[in-house]
Image 1 (cartoon, one colour):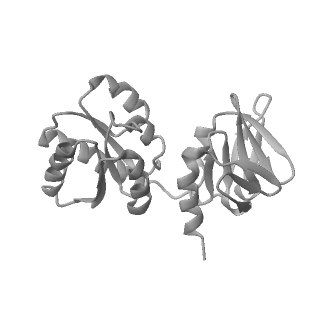
Image 2: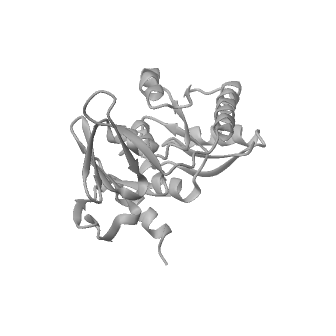
Image 3: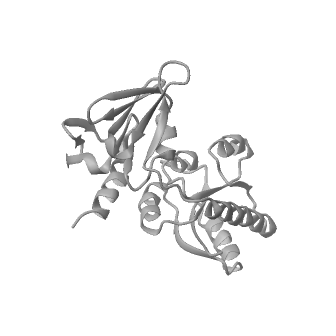
Length: 235
């Protein structure tokens, strides 16, 4: 199994060590490196690596913060000199947590974990359904939602309001749960409180996105990722 990797670390010598390790594994190819986490976001979109070796203590944007902006399809291996971040790292579903100085055997072990996870994912049968169910108020009350009906989802405290073409459905859940489970090619997060259907966008500018007849704010954190998605569909 061939893996594309990317390395983000503000210390050049740490990057050089990981590049040396990668060169010794023919099945791993380093497609990009960066010492600046903010600039690395664009590289992630461009190269779409399978695995990301990510330092935690960095200026402007920590590895923990950056990991929350990365596609869930990218396996994350944190690399840091600080063991106190391990618990938080694994809570973010990181594949592994390498403590500096990193030995080559420990590096190989982390890569093997990525390969094993990728193999298990590939073995899962594809889900072809274009709908899902959400729990509404009352015991065993569920509402069937078709993807094509959704205009946008709005987070309000501990609830998510699913705005459909002709109604609103309220469910006790988090926006993060929907972000992780909705089809990535059909939906995009534009604000900490909003996920929208790309097919329902009528117009956009640098600050707002209009979905059907509703104008929604475009958050600074999500702007670059949003316009990357828009450009992918530009003709």
